[in-house]
Amino acid sequence: MADSVRAVGTVSRGIRCPIIREGDDLATIITESVLTASKDEEWGFKLHDRDVVAITESIVARAQGNYCTVDDIAADVKAKLGGETVGVIFPILSRNRFAICLRGIAKGAKKIVLMLSYPSDEVGNELVSLDKLDAAGVDPYADVLTLEKYRELFGVNAHPFTGVDYVDYYGKLIEGCGAECEIIFANHPQAILNYTKNVLTCDIHTRARSKRLLKAAGAEKVCGLDDILNAPVVRADGSQSGCNEKYGLLGSNKSTEDKVKLFPNDGQGLVEEIAARLKAETGKNVEVMVYGDGAFKDPQGKIWELADPVVSPFHTAGLIGTPNELKLKYLADNDYKDLSGEELKEAIKTSIKSKGDNLVGNMASQGTTPRQLTDLIGSLCDLTSGSGDKGTPVVLVQGYFDNYTN
Image 1 (cartoon, rainbow, N blue to C red):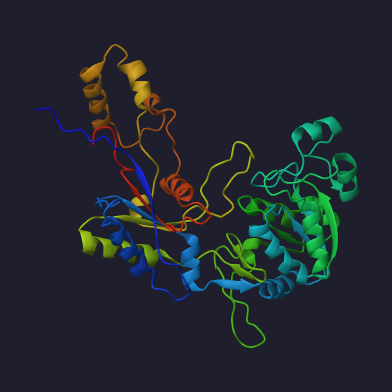
Image 2: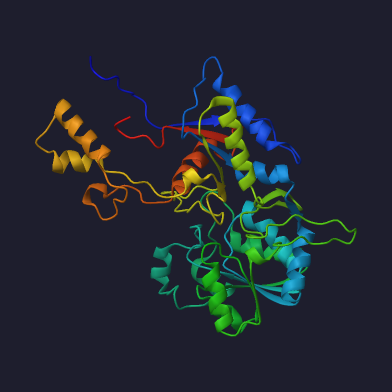
């Protein structure tokens, strides 16, 4: 009798949950939501060892009540950068991610010199096309443009998805908060020092380099977004803002017109508690992670999705590492090119079962994806949950760690 063959590989499921509010018991809600979904008459499933339960960072921060206000941001910026002329460099172009933070920053200074990277921001939002730069003879690696020169050469460039002219939008936002605004375009952090020695560098993944270059070039006060709201702000009434000790404003999102949801604080205990509860309920060793933005690039808009500082800030130990996989089509086309049918199938299974623990450099692994497991699974989960009205802030991934031999 032939061995039974499982015909299904990796499955990603959105798990519907109640709307999460501050103070909610997430460990209970998530555990019960997964178990309830598993018993659904039409869409039900069984849990297995090494299934992954992934939770959006948003509901973790909401349950923690990790918020700050525009005025909290203003107070921290003023305290750390002096409240006079502040250079704000390399922000991303986003109404959700950065615009509300910029309101707070502008309220904490008398003048903002806004330095935008070009032709696009760090995550790929385009201010001007490379073709237009070429036609104008502009070298983005060397040339510093004033707002007037930018407009003369390139006019108005609305974002292809949102229709927003971010240059105009950010300028008016700053002025609307009572600060003077000057806008320049450059790609070297040091360029801002011709305007001010007090700098807030707003890049996400290159922030350590920007800080280093600015300090080496003579900046007097240098902060990143990770240095703003990295500790609570004490308000006039004695209450305290939220904060994120490691990431500050990085990973934050607009909540209301005057309120920002920060990246969640320590959630390691949460993921481990959920894993323990699911083990107690089902007997299965389930991995658990918190995820934010996935790490992928949109081919049409050229936008790199990862605006959070990391994909997964908290996860159980079984999600540490990278895949260790063989490329089946390489084996089929090379090592076993003369085989077919059941003989080919068994040869490939034997290769998988005998593969080493580290395939780096092995030609049979070329074309696989040597990224962190949390980045790969987090990207899958981000695409599954979406950012709209699906109502599935928890995602269950099954079969991710299986291979052709299972």
